[in-house]
Amino acid sequence: MTHPKVGILGGGQLARMLALSGAPLGLRFLVMDNVADACAGQFAPMVVGDYRDEAALTEFASKVDVATFDFENVPAESAHWLSDRVTVFPNPRALAIAQDRLAEKTLFVELGIPVPPFAAIDTREQLGAALEQIGTPCILKTRRLGYDGKGQFRIKTPADADAAWEALGAQAGKVGLILEGFVHFQRELSVVAVRGREGEFRTWPLTENWHVDGVLSASLAPASVDDAMTQTAFEHARKLAEALDYVGVFALELFCRDGELLANELAPRVHNSGHWTIEGSETSQFQNHLRAVLGLPLGDTRMVGVACMLNWIGEMPDALPVLREPGGHWHDYGKEPRAGRKVGHATLRADCGQALAQTLQRVGDALGREAQVAPVIAALAR
Ligand code: AMP
Image (cartoon, rainbow, N blue to C red; front, top):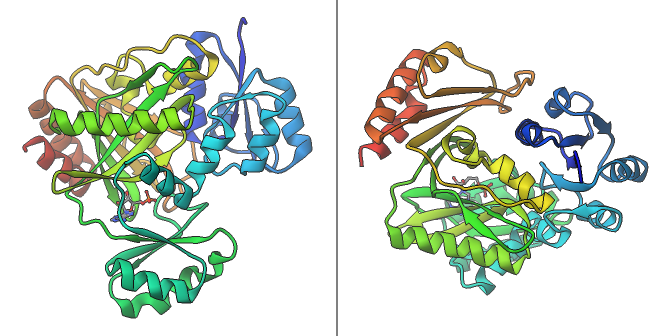
């Protein structure tokens, strides 16, 4: 197939970076989004329409050779409908499981992957009973359609139960709820992995992540984790990929508590904690996702040196302090600034941890982002 056309459902920064990384391979893209100014539209033609709109989906399907996602909350029915008309990776079953925190956690348990205690919640009575069983602190979350800490309520003491139900109870009948024990983790880690059409499986080096208000703030790779724990994390990811017959890139988010790994969630797409791979590894997550869905050989996931990604949320800071760094790389997603919105990121690369810590200190000071870089610098000193 010369110049195959890849369709991407969802036109945000992930679709934009997929399109950019596919250009050298001679790929063409078509992006579908429900808003006309989605930022991937600056680089790829778009079909604008609701993900449930059959006419828009028909147009999309008729114009692409393979379809994939930048957005995991595309309705599962739409993914199924599409898969009857065009090759879709990851497959709709994998997408449906990853969309539902309860189905996802149930699969983790079936595969022997440890998770925090959890319970399905559909009524206020079930919340009361589950609170007694799981104890506090804990987190009430929507089963579906939540992301970046949205659709979550932290319950510190049993007295918060009414407030939690007030905040999320209305969602119980729509998307369902799940109560999870709060994990007092020391670190958050993610495995970004790729599986090809023939079952070939690769992982990038384990990444350590820091969140602020449930949103990713910084990532560091490689995470300094011993070999045994790294292998356990990779094996969890491999088992999941095989159980789901997954094709493409995905991320498995893990909590590390007292030397034990607990799975939080599976993101069925390229992932924010893998953005550092663009400059920090031989083959980026974006290019390997495209290679996987097109049945091309996967690229090497080895990294060179150490890398830290800093997310820009709400508005872009001054680019110059990053651009002045020898290992500084800037990504502006071309979005309008808006509170809480991911508008860009920077990746800082260096040959060793000490040099990276110095770079982060300079960039953090110059941008007034001392608090954002501080935990990464502390981790590099461990
Ligand atoms: P999520 O949307 O589930 O990925 O949650 C976003 C962030 O909230 C996670 O990366 C954690 O920092 C925090 N979080 C979510 N669930 C838990 C939990 N059960 N225990 C502790 N922190 C959590």
